[in-house]
Length: 417
Ligand code: NIG
Ligand code: FE
Image 1: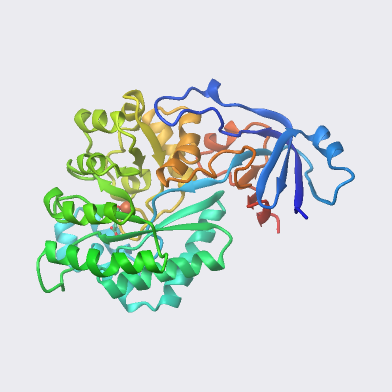
Image 2: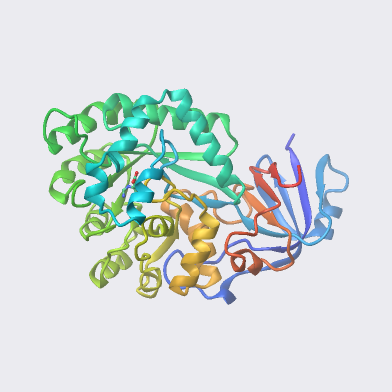
């Protein structure tokens, strides 16, 4: 027997259907379904139609009714396709030093930077990491996020990366949101490794990759291509091995200097993320490819630097996703709704482009074709906002939160309870 739930009436449902994966989107391309109901069956969307019609269709069936009073608008559950919410410690000191004018190198010399978080994360037990992930995932849920990508990358040894990826899996098993893990063992060269960068990367690909496959810990591999992290020559054998083993590739690209998006395109990565330093050459390259360009406005806000040239990427015909990059160093805020609204303001993105960036286009960045839109057969992941006009959501730049969030057809967050 199917478990049926009918939710409504809804002033507006924005299903994000009919939106192309690439290029600009005008607000008039957004389909708006008014006076609607959403019928869910076993966690999936069965139909979206006029509420009264749906209610009469199901009146003789065993159906759970979630009847709403007042105005509610419904958007697909947001997808945060790039985070680092598995970590130990804090980098509040880095933030203060950076704002007081210290450089990246000075902060690292005084014991800050990624290496500081590596040490704090190595000190943490798997259980402590799980608690941290759940605390941050809850914060994302309150923004209407129903799928979160979570990277490792603060372990930087076979054993410690495994601890992080097991913690992400444990948190995923315990929590209704979907946590999609990614191995970021190529985040930086670990200072305590006995050998050079290439030796470190081959140890990871030979020893860690087979365990990730065998224990189904992740099917995604990420690398930070940057001065002081890894270059194209060092990373090529590593990514070739990952592709050969069937991992999806994603790249931290063009954050401070260019080079990463070339690597992403060469390896048919699902996404190239950051791109704050991309020039017209990289923008064209990405636009011609299938790689999803992911802007991380939270990192621009955390570091006080330029935003990703999102408008130019879209105008060149590229695919733009938007993610929070939530991490203890460059992006401590972890508020996707605020950050994507601000990126829209600063880059002159239409509401449709911003919403596509955190729904259907973010799903493509994770290679997921079961979410990011509200249509028959897709996951019943969506949020309700107390308004008759969905444009209020971005207009309030993140201060207007959902009142209810549904994951796989179940009410998992109710602001008033
Ligand atoms: O995406 N750019 C590299 N990695 C992270 C920062 C991680 C950190 O500072 O801890 C990022 O911004
Ligand atoms: Fe990142």
